Image 1 (cartoon, rainbow, N blue to C red):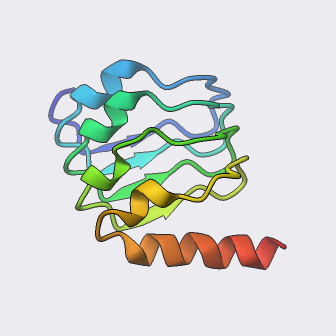
Image 2: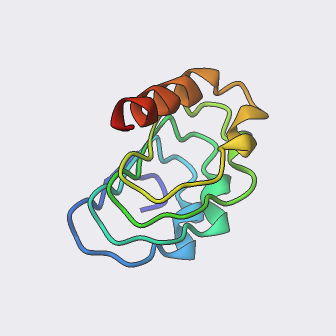
Length: 110
């Protein structure tokens, strides 16, 4: 599983993501939408090859520090969560496109 490039765990009523997710160093696509995940493990910031992250329709209230280290991340979806804090940490990196997409989708909901 270490060489896994795509993981789709959506629609499984998962309440948490295992800390071992950070060991999937070749993971490019992580799709975990429509679960009950309320917190992400800090190890998710170790996924250096991650480009696509879909965590929409979960119960996230905050994100782990260090997401700005995911320099290849270009497509994120946090829609349908309880994220009230600004995504300041992502702004540290070069992920301006995902930030704009998130803000646009949040604006459309209001």
